Amino acid sequence: TACQNTISGTYKCAVGYRKSGSTCSGGSTTDTQSCTACNYNGASYQCPSGNRRAGNICSGDTTGDTQTCAVCNGGTSYQCSNGSYRSGSTCSGLQNIDSQSCTTCINGGAIYQCGLGSYKSGSACSGTGNSDTQTCSVCLYGGSVYSCAVGEYKTGTPCTGTTATDTQKCSSCATHPNCNKLSTTIPCLISTTPPTKACQTCN
Image (cartoon, helix red, strand yellow):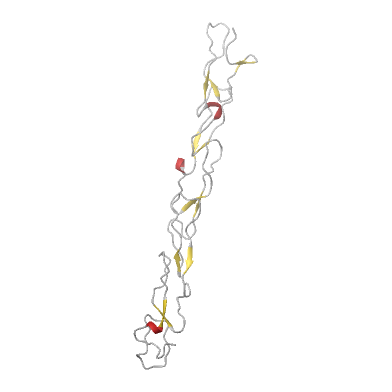
C-alpha cells in the first residue's frame, strides 16, 4: 500500500505543514510518512494581532518549522510612547512588515512646550491617538512681545508657553483706580503693571 503524503513518488507534505516522520523504506509494515501543521495555524500562517510574519510559510518539503512571528512596534495594543502618536496601522498578523509606526508630536514631544508668547491649545500626546494633538496658539496683545495699546495697561502676565490659557490681558485705563485722580497730562504708561501714572482724562 502506498504511504500517505506521497506526491509523484516523493514524501511531501501540504503547504503549511512540515515532515514529522521519515520516508517509507518499503520494508516497513507501518506508514512513517507523517506531517504536522506548522506554528500559527498551518497553511493560513496567521500571527496574533500586533505581530508580523518573521519567517516563511512551510513548503511541506522540510522537517523544520519556518513559520515564526515577531512583535510589531508597540505590541498588541499598538502603544506609542508619550509625546508620540500612531502614524501607521495595526499589524494584522498576515503581513511581513511592521506597519505600526509612531511619530513624535510637535512642540516638545514628551515635554509639551510652546514658545514664549504662546499657550497650549491642544492636549498632550498620550501615544494612543492617531494624530498630533499638541497645538499651540499665539497669545493676544503681541504674542512674545506683550504690549497693550495706548490708553490700556497690562492686567495679565506674559505667556510662558507652559500654560493652557492665554494670560496676556489688557484693560482700559478708565478702569484703573487712579484714573482722573492724578493731575497730569502724561498718557497711561503701557510698559508697567499697573501704570505708574494714569492719564487725567483716560482717553
